[in-house]
Each structure stands twice: as structure tokens, then as C-alpha cells.
Image (tube, rainbow, N blue to C red):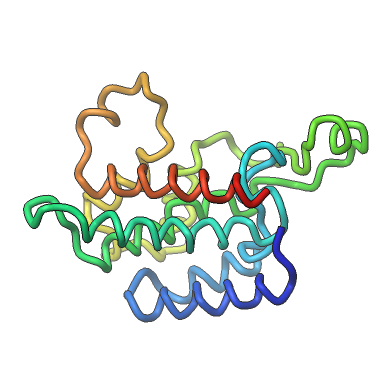
Length: 191
């Protein structure tokens, strides 16, 4: 759980990173902010990760930190630019904005730790698909994502049975996946 002060710090850090690393148009972040980006949770249940207000941006920032460190460890032939690593890290999960609504069932909250439910008004998409959709539908993606960045965002949440996503990815996609796993592991220890 984080407090209002930390949510505000994360908001400032997110905007600063967007500007410093040329991640996307600020207009996209402003539109997502209006949709609840900075208050959004990263997941629905307490046994998952960051299932609290502000959990999503907290998670995205943590993923970016791990991704930069992982990228630095790679041999030159596999390294990606820092801008690209930060871009996919900060944008991969924006599709969770507006995806969850507070759980209305006290029983589910108390007995299952289900803090949020899925917003049934939204069309079913993976998080990666919704993230790219938000960028495209707001005309904020044109010229900002490379094909490798697009692939990393679109495929990070595909199942292990998806051989195309699993075997035909770039080092950027693998950096993102590993950074997400590490961030989630850390977040679960703080729960």
C-alpha cells in the first residue's frame, strides 16, 4: 500500500521520465491521467501485486528500474537503447488504466482479498493490446514506437503456449518480461 504522498511522487517521477527519455507525447499521459492512470491498481487481488490505488504507476516505475539494470548487464550485441527500455517499461501496462473497478462485495474483499473487479464495459483485450490501443486511439503512437518496442509491449503478457511470442522476440521483449517478473516478486514481498 502507498499513501497519497507517494502517489504524487510517482506521478511526478512518471512525468519526468516521459519527458527525459522521450517516451511519448505528454498529451497521452494527460488523457490517461484523466482516465485514472495515477490512481489505478496494478492487479485485482491482494495475493497478486500492487492491488491498491496508485499501484500501477508504482509498478511501471519499478519495472523501468529493473529493465535498465538488466539491459546494462547484457553483452553489447543484445543491449537496447536506454530510451527504448524505459519507453516499453513505462508504457507496457497503461492498458490497465480504467480496467479495474473497486470490488463491491465485502465478502470477496474480506475472504478472498479481491479488491477490484474487471470493468465489464470494456472490450476484451490483453493488457499489451489495450496499451497499444490507448496509444493508437489517442493518436499518440505514430512514429514513437519502433517495431521491436511494439512487439515487446504487445507480447509481454502472452501465454507460454504462444510460440510466436515466446520464441520470436527480441532482447527488448525478454528484458521487459524479466523486469516485470522481478518487480512483481519485490512487490509481493511488500504486501
